[in-house]
Length: 574
Figure 1: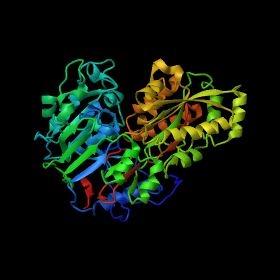
Figure 2 (figure 1 turned 60 degrees about the vertical axis):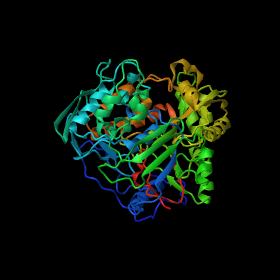
Figure 3 (figure 1 turned 90 degrees about the horizontal axis):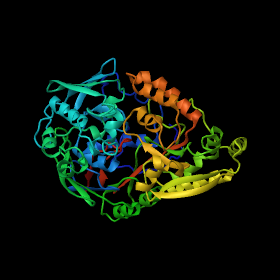
Figure 4 (figure 1 turned 90 degrees about the vertical axis):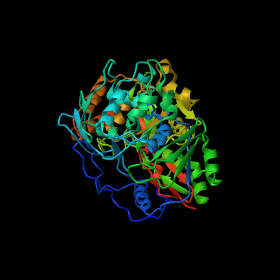
């Protein structure tokens, strides 16, 4: 990867020699790893250093680690969630069959020690850890795995089967046992306590990486039966389980949840792995980025996520530690083809040529952010250098606008305010830079700013407001290592965001998703990436590097590109 903005970084813990983390291959369906001769980005190098240094962190320190969240969890049952703050809490309490290899999005053993996919891509055999118990004393075994899959697949009609609530199950498994279309999950077979087989009705090459999602973490069947069952039409996020009885196998368990204020966790004494070094974790909600910055500087918290780019120098100067999470995201300028003349390829090309991505990155994104060539990050299977590029050229932009008869073009430019996302830490600043660039080639910009929720996302993604947005800023942080989690999310079907109906593209993405192996998918996705950049539904701008900040006393933390960050190794030295 290219490193455009190298800088000095302060790292947590003693920085040792960078060591490669090697895990045994567990079947033919694992995504290809980064080539050993591929240069790592600054953030990837820092992450490897932090992971190595965590081994030298003290075994104990203060009894509490305080990490500020940007919002309250939506629920404590991760199956009914899709937001990062809910998942941050879930990763402390729950574990899945599959984890991630440190500093990557690649799958790694967790509650499953190994796995193997069938040749047709419809069946997966997992070997499980022995001697693991849930936090209520229930045994984790193959029957518990099957119980979880059956629980997920047999949710009652109503909110529990809506995309807003069970987003990941519907996105990846396409439905439920009684829905139309039905789920692609077929059955689960427990052949012994430590051997389980998951059967699907169609190939899904991304199945194993998807199992690293917190939404598919293993939950105690006993606790779900007692507290988590909901009737048809009821809201599952507010079940007794989801509000106060989350029960997993993770290193921490729920102590209390003061809704809207903070979550308190305590170490699980019966944890099967390495016990948590810090007995208590407190996750308060502090929405304002400036308030989080001040709380860290004042010693009220020990760390927080999504540091505003403008705060990095200040915090660094105050002696705080800045950690960059390896980028696994995309920031893009979307173009709604339902609004003329954005349905004209020449107009979309003109907009692409008008944008100076280097200036956008330098002026509005954290140091270390990379220019994007396509809608997937470079470490994803199917990424290819061989795509059409639109190098910054105001002259080409003006010429194309003239050819399209759009020299007097006026565009509505939608952007969000009062929000910071990993792929878009300062949307107002990004908007202002791009607006100036568009105006420089003769495009008149009509700014429209909205609050992130519910107004902005509703306007961009709702059928009712298709004609109310033209170009817009948005992005995506990948959830797991699968190309469909980017391209399929964006372009797998007709949506109000993009406003186009390209059935050939939809069919190609559907076919690629159903291929049996990652190896088969690679050339198909490379071709699709090329086609997308020729078709140009939007302009991929950058892969921003999200930044975290910690007090100087914090040791033992390392970041994850998919936010698979468990606090059990963290120590606050005294």
